[in-house]
Length: 195
Image 1 (tube, rainbow, N blue to C red):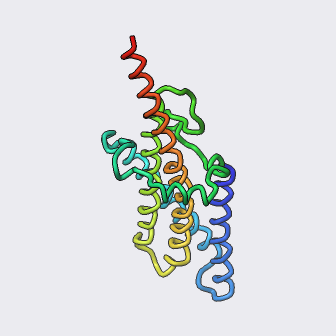
Image 2 (tube, one colour; image 1 turned 90 degrees about the vertical axis):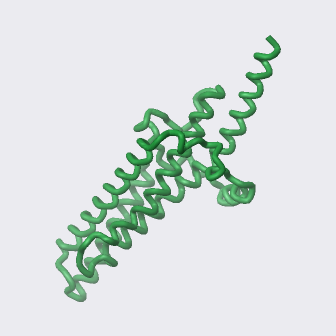
Image 3 (tube, rainbow, N blue to C red; image 1 turned 180 degrees about the horizontal axis):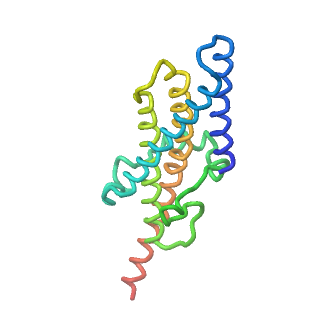
C-alpha cells in the first residue's frame, strides 16, 4: 500500500511541479491554479474509480463466474507473467478485498467452495481494475480549458498505469486457484462415492 501511495503522491507532485515550472516560465497560470487543478483532476479520477468499483460489485454475480471463457488465462499469458516474475512482486500490490469482506492476500483454507469463491473474487477485482483503467480516461472529457493536457492526461495515465499490476496479479493467481478447486472437487466427489 505504501508503494502505491508513494507512486500516487509522487505522480501528483511531479504533475504539479512540471506545471508550476511551465506557469512560472511562461506565465500560463498561477501556481495556486496548478495545485488546484492537480488536486481537482485527482478527485475526479478517484471518484470515477469508486463509481466503477461499486458498479462492478453490485452487478449480477453470474457475470463473474471464473470459469467463463472471457476470464480464461492461456499458456502464453502464463509464460508472460512468469517472464515478468510476477511471483516476486505480486504481494506488494495493495489488496483491498477486505472492503468487500474477502481478503485475497493469501489462501486461508484448502476447501473447494472457498477456492472457487476466491477465484470469483479475482474476477471481480480484474473487471474492477479494467473498468478503472478505461473509465479513468473520462476525465479528459470533463469541460475545462486548455489545461486538459497539463493535468487531466497525466493523471489519467498514472491511474491507468496503476491498474495494470492488479489486473496481472488476478490473472496470474486465478488458474492456480481453479486448478486447486478442480482437484479438491474431484477428491471430494471420489471420497463421497466410496462411502
